[in-house]
Length: 236
Image 1: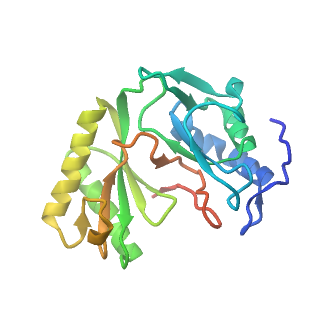
Image 2 (image 1 turned 60 degrees about the vertical axis):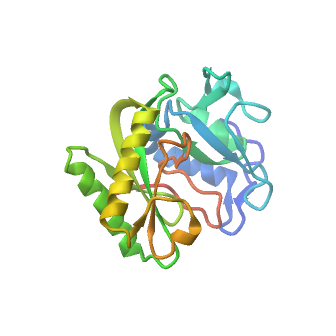
C-alpha cells in the first residue's frame, strides 16, 4: 500500500502520523485480524487528524477505495463495508480512518449476531477496581450458564465483556443481554444501572448492550480518535 502524505499527523498531541498508524497495524495484524476481518464496519474518518473535522461513515464513497474493501448491499439497500486483509485496513488508514467499529455479525450473515458485547461504562466517581469487579461479575454470571467470555478495553473509560455465540437473531441476542443487565441491576441496584440516563449513573457502572447497536464495538487493537488515543485491547 502506497501512502500519500505519510508524514501527516493524525494525533497532534502525541505526534502520531499516518505512517506510524500504518506501521502499528502491520505489527499487530495477525493478532487483530480474527476480530476484524469480514465484520461490518462503521468508520470514524478524520482526514486532517483529530484536530480537524471528523465524521462517521458506513459505506464506500469518495476517499475510500472499494477495490481494497469487501462491500455488500443489505436488504434495505445500504452498502456495508468490511476488510478482508491487511491491504484493506491500510486503505482505510490512507483515507484518514482513525476508528473502526465492528458489528457483532459477519458480512456474510448480517442478520445473525455471533458476538454480544456487555459495555461496562462507569459513571462519575467509579473507581477502576469497581469497573474490573463489574466485568468479573458479568463473566461469572455467564460462566454459571456455561458461556465463555473474554474482556477487552473499551477504548474509553470502561471495559467490554465479549461473549462469542454460535449465532442468534438480533432480537434474541438483545433480549438475552438485557435480561442479564436487568438481573444485575435488580441484585445490586447501588452498583449497577441499565439505563443511559446520566443523572442515574453517578457512582454506578452503566450496563449497555452493543448487540442492539450494530457497529458500536471498537475493534480490537484499534485506537480512539481522542487525545493520545486509546486502543480497544483484550485483557486477561
